[in-house]
Amino acid sequence: MSRFLFVVPPLVGHINPTVGVAAELATRGHESAWACADPALVRRLAGDDVRVYPCAGPMLGSGDGTRPPELRGPEALKFLWERFLVPLADEMAPGVRAAVEEFAPDAVVADQQTLAGGLVAERLGVPWATSATTSAELTDALAGLPKVRQWLDEGLRALRARIGDPAGSADPRFSPHLVLAFSTRELAGPEALEGERIRWVGPSIASRPVAPGFPWDWLDPSRDKVLVTLGTANTDVGGRFLAECLTALRARADRVQSVIVDPGGTLTGPDADTVDDNATDDKDVLIVASVPQLPLLERVDAVICHAGHNTVCEALWHGVPLVVAPIRDDQPVVAGQVTAAGAGVRVRFGRVTAVKLGAAIDAVLHEPEHRAAAERIGTAFRAAGGTGAAATHLERLARPSKEDQ
Image (tube, rainbow, N blue to C red; front, side, top):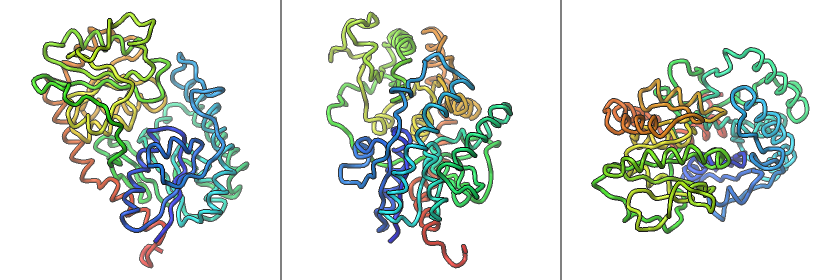
């Protein structure tokens, strides 16, 4: 039996992939634990009985981590690193070290956004893997921004001097031992990084706790179904976009039924004027705070989203084409991957109108090449091995065979 410590940020899309891998490791007799700044979130996603070591750390979207919604491009990237990722690494480091010393893992699995995981493991001499929950970092997205790359490299060197091994040289975003890339080249494209340590395992798709109450009987088998979701971190900026989606989808209610995820209540709150009611007898549009996404994806025909990597991969796993409206961070890169692969249509998040959204919806629903591309990528995802392949690579990292040494 081996022990694995998953070091993750307090973000749903970065925790969920580790949950599936840990579940697979458990079936093979291994033990896992997590280190996170939000233990309650890990337990909600992985189960109440999992072991979680608490760490200090900021929460993106609160306090100094509240990002001005107008930030885009390099300025948004700078804000993410200066106000969230670097403080998260500095504040998590003592908790991660305590977790490693107490749990004594055979290997650490560090999300790309929890740099403390790799740096602390490096300092303590523990083998570590990178959990690359988005493929954007694996496509050299900063190739055309040399000044931004230089600024980031300098920041990473300073971070290593504070919490890592000063003699180390590995980029803390990419383990020198193993990088688990939860995608495939069919989506990431031909420019994706190569190397023996980079293992393209496809998405980590595994069963998750599903809250009761979703009205499955509401779904109409005679109409196409569209899911609209902007993830869990974009509540502050999504109101206008969701309203345009609602208008476009209501105009197609004779042939399309839609589910809109609106966690902030922007469409149904007391100040909303875009809908009259969210009554259960509305047979065209269902507006809810959350959905059981994986089982719902088995039943929908298209997804409108912000090009978050998890949502994109989960949709494509099910062969569902997308309308992508990237907001910031890695999302423009992921959106570019979707359109380059032919699996969807891109629209401008801040400026798209209901008319243009409607045209994009019609395209992914009725132009067969988009669905064919989505199904092709889904086939490649399954062939990559998912959680099983990831678990096998981690086993080899934790207990290398004589042939691997």
